Length: 129
Image (tube, rainbow, N blue to C red; front, side):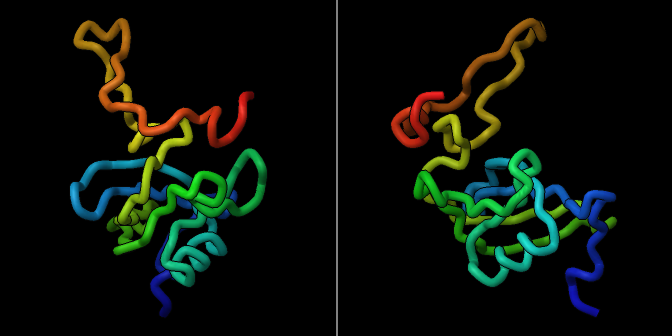
């Protein structure tokens, strides 16, 4: 049995993928994969995800150049979540931060604070919305 056959994709054929820095352990992002994007990730050695909004594959860093070189792909005991350890080149977040988890809830729960320095201005890479 292939390793991919042990995975449990949801009713839409997707599985959540948590992306973590292989060196620091920092969680960089979460995205969705289908079997094809996971197979492409394995083949390329760089992350490829499924865009639910665009309904197509997207290669991480294709526009920005901020790619993720895959170091390890693991899955949890239930086979329904992936953990992908990567070498992150540049920012993982399309908003210009190293991690998509750049905001933390304040102690009183009423607000949030930015916890990372922005690495690039998204308007410079993706254009103004």
